[in-house]
Length: 294
Ligand code: G1P
View (cartoon, rainbow, N blue to C red):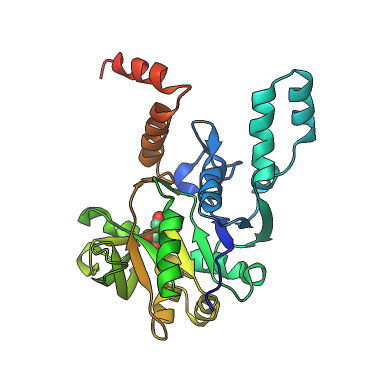
């Protein structure tokens, strides 16, 4: 019987070196796009996809994430006495939003290692993984798109995106063959091989893995079986490659726009585009940008 995906794992123990000094004392997952921390975009995507059980893999110096999803009595009290009803609702919505569990990754030994840390909280059921650096603006949430494929094939599914050849080395890359799904062709692939951060000349395609995964619990055995790979870290991509020996894995070229918010330029692009879309800010911000001497 097909089990429903109820849980989303958020690896959030990385050191955020690409964003220093902003991330010296603050987790990168708490950097705000307009007025919402990166991780909240990911959590909202999970919830809008029907996944309500959130597991955050944290590390040292990440308590701001726990505080963010917790109730803040002082702040709520202050907003109540000042009659700031809208703000109070915004603040309450964050803590009401999720059922969240935390597990620590004591050392940053890689994405695969982070996912392995969630093993006990996930248990023996399918689950999803969301990397909050990858912010995806889509009509149907990206995770929901992957879940639709999962519910059809009952097999792991990875989010895929075509990227320019010169930046392929920043990603996990797949070798994959297109397959039909519900009559729709062109977005669904069956994975033949995966490689983490290959050199440009060694990349099997221009199809990169983006930070959304639907996984089955067999991934944990695979992650335990593999040795450190790219960067000396336990890589999720390598775990998937190991799992591919015994079961099929699918990839889905999702619809939507992805921003690499872990990168300064990507973060700025997301900030500008999200601000332009906001009802309360868009018009004034557009006007401001138009008058800049570019
Ligand atoms: C991770 C994964 C990589 C994937 C990327 C997507 O890399 O290891 O396979 O393509 O996320 O953002 P990172 O960006 O954490 O180095």
